[in-house]
Image (cartoon, rainbow, N blue to C red; front, side):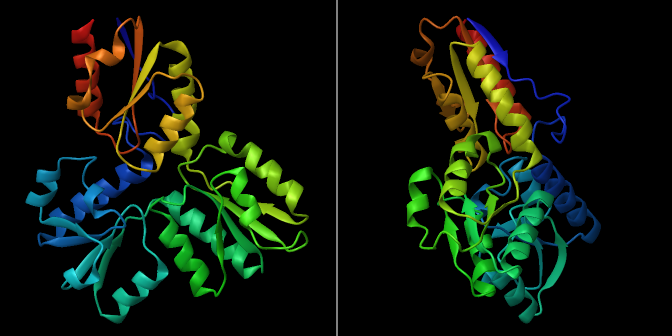
Length: 293
């Protein structure tokens, strides 16, 4: 059985360690600050359970770094994590006098937030094309609530009918950062049919624009594909994208999750990691699959 790894090398916006730019950047910021300040630091995170999985968790803990989504657990200083924070959390942190030593929010998340604010300030009704369970929803919902406006979440064409607006009411459309715009053509087409005044901003991050096409290539070139990841954002998008090409799609969180029975009769297997999957985990998955050959 031939094992083929998804080739992300040289892809614009994807660091050599295979992580997305936002996660890679946040890790650098957090570790450098821990070393420079030489004191315990807490990262406020929308997903504290996943905050350090892209790196060596023990290493981060040894540096005095921890993560939480509860301001009550932060005594004096904090870093906003890669996924950002709703404006209400930022305001409460300032009100409590907590020291914000850094904001490691992904630049593409910041762009998405800026697009949402611009649409809302223009008087548009905000529509977000996204999985309703995505961790980024609280940020955008918080922005809409602060400006006294609703947020309409549209994961598929079917949910367009749930938007209780008339045809002539203007809408501003943004997309989940981990979505590939190719996946949205049908939804966007349906929105253009339903509404007369539609403004669209493609807020997908560069990682999704680069990683998801590789998933398509890999799924079409192999008998089965293994996606190593655990986040409901990019990992979910990668699985959905792969399933549009083949039925043999297997999602694992760790190499230990591999089941040899999945690959009986397969002549080739593709392997690719998600945006928060460390390099060693992808390498170990490849090694174990090659041992089955």
